[in-house]
Length: 494
Image (cartoon, rainbow, N blue to C red):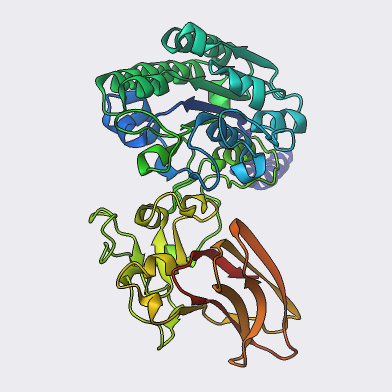
């Protein structure tokens, strides 16, 4: 009887124990990896030449991430030279804010717009920040503070091939052995080869091969770190400007304005990033908040204009036939209406058109169209100046065209915010207006553009009438002859 009692108790204990034995172990989240950033700058590296050259390490970065061509501002905002270019890359704001217009740095506002390294250092002094450069003005003017360690050479005096090699060796050591939370490495010899021999030269391609090998060494140094497996590295590659075929930059040609951003991040944006996105991406990866002109790659707001189908040129002869870049057919729900009294001019600009930087700036270079830097991808343009170039229609009538949005739901709202990018150049009697119509009623004017306003971001509070359910927004350019233009991008009502 005693043994039977023990057996019963054992079975009871097992009944309680067995479910516990088969419980799955508690899941433990993998420890977060430590974010690290390396930005590599290649001075004067033209995007098309870089990709066609023997540059396996650049292509390896592309294969593990993302890359796209971008375009600089032009003479309407700043020269396509190193001072404005590196200031834009390192601060994350455009030249109308940092005020660097050329290599003199005269009148700059860099004290108000510090580099991303300095912002990171201020936000978290524990971060290890580093810069290695051999064009001294970057150190003297842009990176005046905020680096725990800065290695500076004078490539103009010592020569860039030798200086680039020393920069690479110092950066290798730093990246391999230091905490290296945030680093910027600049290499300058491609630009010198461009000036001396031109972008079409064998010497320019050879400089790219040399810098490509040095990029490979920097990446290898990162990957050889003892702590690499527990780190989350964002590596970006960029340039400050392009070069002409014969050599040189500073002007407004597509080749001089040609830049790029390559990133190892997971983002695959539908619209190419811009140079200001380098600083924004670096800071976001490091967890540092900042209000900049740029967006972390892949985080720029969605824009309905980017969904349109573009066509090749019709009347514009200055644009290559292979460049797709205009249409009057807006996204779903958008309409373009031209006045019946508006004479026929250049087909591409017969009223509001949807276009791109590459197409629009080629139609008439060096007239500040290049300064439309806050627009991305496809944007809307009303361009009486170009419209008048076929048959001088302004001699018999005025440009008058209106672009209208779909109906936005404003039910229950007392006010809404209207935002859009605006690039407006004024001349003569030309006027641009923005109006809102509620529930199909009369248009109410909310903004008039009648003075120059380049590369602006407009934000308007609009009162919603009681009981209103929908709102449509209209942009009208009218009373214009052979005057200037208006570009609008990324409109939204929130």
